[in-house]
Length: 332
Image (cartoon, rainbow, N blue to C red; front, side, top):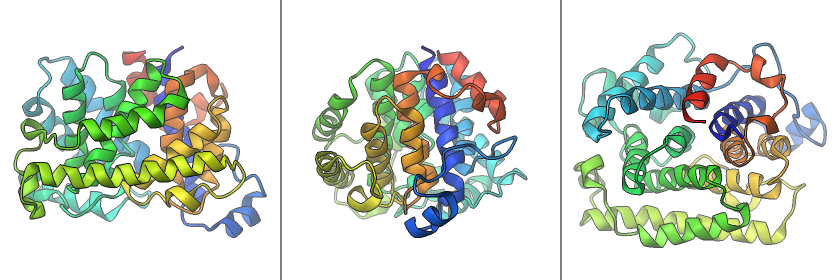
């Protein structure tokens, strides 16, 4: 089914579809795109945002690291640092990137230890919009996948909610690629929140927790898991309403933070589990961080349904198609 390619291309498709609506409210979206919102990619190439650019950075570094085992924090950290700094300095970094990513990457470029460069109080969706490759990478233990997903977030976003939401996003992608039924996903994510609530991955995160003022590493991470649990409660409420036509941000949040982006991206996917284009269209037609919401919805839908579920002609039109194809093909 080429599920890795489905996820990585789906992520870019959602990002591209949601980019023109990111800073519009629902009235503006309907006025510009009609009642249904955007349904087709625009342009050739169809441009993406920093969401896809940074996902590619995470993915290409992972490809390099996995070719040089063992996969450890000491191996991947400088690779991600280099890729993030390259993104910072790229002339294509002109897609309204988030201030947290810019600020942290400038610190990385200046040679600061990443624990000092990261924005410790930020839980923005930049933490998990780019984590899908960690979920797709084959052969990782659960502990390694968890630590790596949190580390890639922590390089720029040091808040525990960003870390927890990134881990949940990566595991959602992994579980869907492994065949989990979408209806089982919210419960599985909730169970992981409870299981991991006091687990601090010191080998991957070092002394990051000390920057928070928390009394212990366990207290630090618990805050993130608890916030994600609250957001999963909102997801359950939204799914119970099963409203496919209203703004998906109304209950689960606008997606500017990592936990909201996870919940609202999941909502868009779970409302349309067998209709991937509708899932990303719903994310794009939202009042919040529409490109990140649709980006995550596309990753979830593609991980479940594979590359063939997307319109064939989109693959040749999406920006960075060669990089996306390289990552997907390596892990299909």
